[in-house]
Image (cartoon, rainbow, N blue to C red):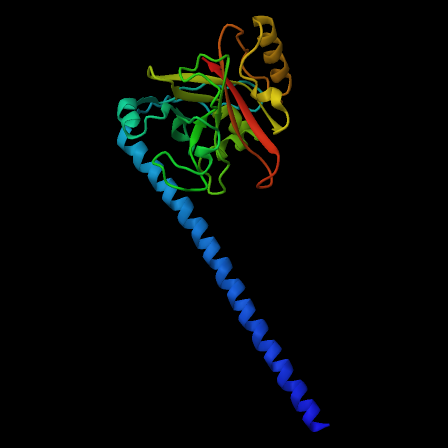
Length: 266
């Protein structure tokens, strides 16, 4: 009987030790994964920050003394900084460059690239490094010169706040009205673009990413449909202007949720 108890005790101790070893390996693996993610984020963020510091200059608007306005119930107009970017230098580093996008007072300050497919820059940075953040890139079917009626630009929704994460903040009404003007350089200097609509959707809702239209009437019908989906009373669209659509993920990682922001030149 004592021998059986001793054998049982030894067996239990072995099982306990094995479980401890397994737990340690799981912990180390998880820690390594977290460290790898952190390094991935840090590497990509440092790359884009360095690039921006090298090629982008900014002139802040003069501050005006005025009473704080309540912007929760009305469109709020504001001055944005004046930006300049040495786009030729950027293109020299990466010939895939087709522009630069900035959302003042946010992390969005990136070159826009375009590849022959829509997968390359999902996991490849501007400088060609492999990273989960990828790059901000134009849809392969859009015209490089932004002459498409609707130019699609994609960016990841990164947990560290980088890339197109800030777009999701537009579900907050005050944030939206303080960030509804984007500065985009399409090759001829920065120009201001205003949000005409923004909303949550899913990847199967292909109408949000329609690039061309069979007629001006069809284009206007599409503009009317996207404006109706927005919960804010945005600036009016102009059927004679092309649209730029910014697209990012929303919700659970790997899910079908998306958030889109439609812009037109101010």
